Amino acid sequence: MEFTALLLAVTVVMLVAWRGSRTLALALFAATLAASVVTYLHHATDVLKLSF
Amino acid sequence: MTRSLAVTLNALGLYGIALVLTAAFAAQLWLGELPCPLCLLQRFAFALLAIGPILNVRFGPRPSHYALSLLAAAVGATVATRQILLHVMPGDPGFGSALLGYHYYTWAFIGFVAAIILIAAILLFDRQFTDEETKPMPVGAFAQVAVWLVIGLTALNVVSTLLECGFGACPDNPVEYELLKRAR
Image: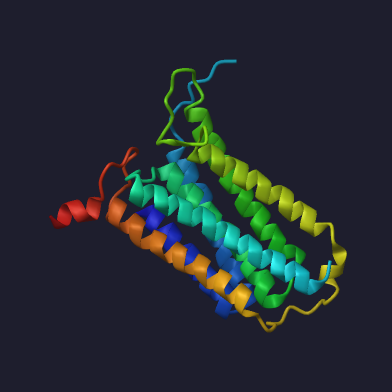
């Protein structure tokens, strides 16, 4: 569900960037980027099978 | 580099992003390979990469617009690196099928790094930034089609992801569309 929400959010940011205010687009971009980082950290829990 | 050439290059960048999103859809629909959570995040990062060029096309090239794309490419490269490392051990077959010897996440990593290099190269040309105003400017058909193409493909990804994951968490290794399964 979170990925659907993220993709919906980026679609909205694109539409705002194309048709709306530049400042709002920049603010929404920042919020969407932050949400994607949080989602990534939430999912990146598997231990990497690496040895150095 | 003139302002109009920079806008044309940004429109070309949007066509490049549209090509990547289309290729991902092609693999999903024709090969039946549903995207995993990290794959979806990489698609998202490609879509996020398009915001900078859209702003450049509409308001004219600004360093801040390029910065947005650099941030998006950095996030995308991080996610792709994570997925490469998950399958880096000898004997691991990787996730999904390979294209020209590389899996999609490896191609995604190459794509994000290429985007960073191309954006850095285009930032070298100061003359595109001579106009300090950031007001909307007339946009040609070539750029308009590029923008709507990327927006349309991203909207299709919203529908596809909703069908795949439904209203719950996306499975790590999806094999069927969750929402369609429930409808049956």
